[in-house]
Image (cartoon, rainbow, N blue to C red; front, side):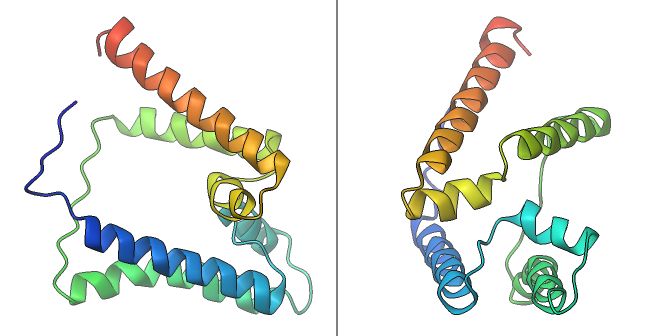
Length: 144
């Protein structure tokens, strides 16, 4: 693995991280909610009265933000080195892990770790270790 230092953007990454942190903190402090994507979307699939509006706004923000960035001139061309089948299987695996882990990477990794939740610390360490192991095995053992 190599890093393209000419394309390294620490300031935009810092800005994005700050915006995510502010948004997560505001949702927790103002509404007492955890900004975990799986929980937010899951609440839309099993709606309760008075609990849908903020969830729709949250998901709409996830969809609209890249469009606003594109209008502002930010070039975002995703490149995925995998077939649609592999991406779909990976999505299913993440969904299963989300159910077993009682939360997703955003809920545990951003919100839970910030609150020093023991469950989130273990979950985050587990999914990071699984990711490291998967990349190592796929790239160095299987040679893909």
